[in-house]
Length: 480
Image (tube, rainbow, N blue to C red):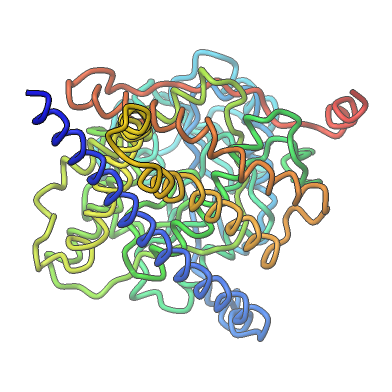
């Protein structure tokens, strides 16, 4: 019996090692593709190719849709950032998703809105709409008050209200740089028949200064949890999604900041309420529709740092966020399981979805059990030192390489943290995150997967927000 147990443990140890070999090879491919894609993108900007392609007369109108539920802390600043966009023709649609705090009142007071009559056509079926609020002095801003029905339904309300061929989904806790919409529309302007959706980089705004909806100073927060998330966001977006986009295999566009062709979204039925990852679900549904009908299309990622969002500042809220993300991933992959390994779906079925399943969904489970069993096996004498050191190299040292590599790529390209002190701090946290932080995140994601498999805790877990830092608050923090 003990001999069989030892064989089973050895088999598991080798499986874990094999997983890390495969995962790190895939990470290296993505990293290489991301570096090539980002440098190519920057060269186009430098040599003016993009500038010639964004003639304002060629740019189609855009509706910016923001769904908000209990976002009183930051809603006015977020909307002001939208109203400051350099884009020539756009409207801002704020959907108050039955907030129980003062979100609606702050919008009314902040923009001097009045209730008005508006014809509502539910091309995509939605829950009840209570009313519309506008101000003649700001005709491109409409606030829609609805019953509380969740973010997907609120976005569908916005799509129904919109009067433009494209819409941009923006979270209520975000601030956009002034040229954000223009940057996101560049590939669409260049090839409107091909591009069905685009997404941009999302950065952590914690520690930066926001005044009246404008990001006036980029800085690092004082707390370690926010700094660790900054490193994580840089790595995830700058080479994770950029790499997938370069390989034409992007299946996740962050709902925090994404652009879609409206008719394409309407044709597939809008956002779904069957998952808490409505952004990924919609992207996969578009992939499926396009591939099923044999249409040429592209869904891509723009590596410009153009959207800033508030990250959780305590472990409880961070755990809620990460469990929700992983639950949504599990739900969506299950719903689209019929696309796996089918020739009709090409690289989506043979690469993108298997990657999401084996690396993103199951990876945290293998990682959590791997740390426990491989370490216990070493101290029990089941595996030798050479095997254990190889495991640590693959699981920790290469993780440090990819994190610090992403930070250096950020410094070489976009330099949003130009101070040497900030760069050194980020590199330090790029090392530190691999000793505790990443393992805790994996534990939460493992918990979420088991809950999803057992049909438990599938609802939306709300994350409390504190609002953006102002100049006065930043000075106070610095004084401390």
